[in-house]
Image (cartoon, rainbow over all chains, first blue to last red):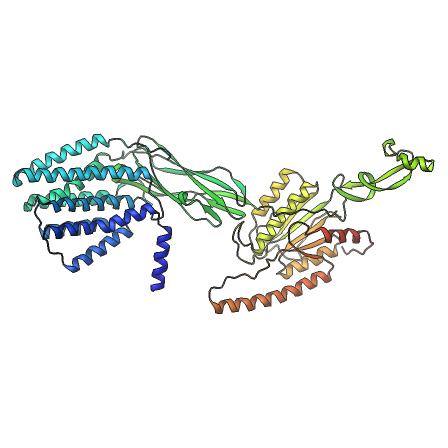
Length: 181
Length: 437
């Protein structure tokens, strides 16, 4: 069994493209960034939950083209809601970084089989998109800090999101083909 | 395989998690969940905004070969053209593995950005054919994804294209003359005198002799006109008899270890090239299931005909491959070159039959030097070794029978393989003999 595992790992190391390794590593690590943010915010992180996250994150890294990434995301969001850190704290931003990284890296890794190297233009495009999504999180976080919590939940947050969506749609309305394809 | 655009896991994930965050944030007064859910909602909304047209033409991947036939070890490329890509941002393509075809690592599978306004995208796969034969290349799968990875079409199967890999010509050259040159013009020295360049002797001038043949030195010395006599130069017919009844040993492609059929086919290719180059007429017969006989002929087109027939060879037995039904249909004087690993009694019987018919026959032994190493465990290796030794003993018996039937056996070693034995056959051809027909 151990020998078979060793052979499988060696084969995976050999066949996977470096860009896929990087994307899958991010998928594996990003959930723990969210857990770390919750811990920094004061939440108690039980050991069994770490195991659950490890399991779902590993499944996501192995099969990013399935709903495993979505399941990991839901597990993290439920834990965040259950542990209840404050919205205005900086760790929320750290958690948002983890969520965006998981989503973007899962999307990139899920584009093709492990042996397929990711197109550099595609990676650049998604890094820009990740930056945009982090900007959205930052705007939502900033708006929440300066305004009244009750009102912003329903009105200002939605207005800001709509504005950012409009801007992003204009900015990324057209995909630029990459030279050398 | 999925026809049509369908939502991806990315869209479902962003929409579900983002909406869940929004609902929980609004319901339970948890604005921090807005911070986590907002990026996901934005990603989902942008994917929905950039949704590809539902009435788009279906995706149609087709592949096209740069060259339909090539030699072992040569490179070519397959262009996979995907049509109907309107609205797609990214294309992924994978290539199935094909036996003895090396695909460049970056070509095995790739992701590419594509212009969403463009309808066609070309992907080039570079490959190297490692072994002769017919092989399907370029088959695989292709998929397209819309902007923000919201919608995907495929994966769709990409049909492959048939590539003919012609055997590489093993290095071969021979200076030996054919034993029975019976043609009109060629490079072989005939037994009769005639118009040629090979010196045969000097004789007194006779009516009809050409003046440019007069040897003035001898004529002055003797006081009578003498002329130089030369041998005529003729071509000959060569029949390549290829034994494809079995393939022994592992094949490692053009640069790796060779199986018995690899050696046989490459030797046949080399002999074809050589004999056609010197102006002989060459024919081909294959003992095997995919044997397409090629009649005698010469020239470049005939060479390609023989090479294509060699590329079609598959190992195995066929109903037609019986000694009783076997007929060579070869004209008198044809040199028969039997290329065989000599592991089948049928081959020995055919060799003896050909030898008895009076045609000069040379058996070229194409068994690889090393025993095939296919066993994985020590015990299996020991059993295989014993079996191989027993097989070799049987083979020695078959070779003995062939030698007793008067057929010379030479081991294929490339250049000069046939020189000595052809000279011996030429000497023997000048002796009277009894022929069984």
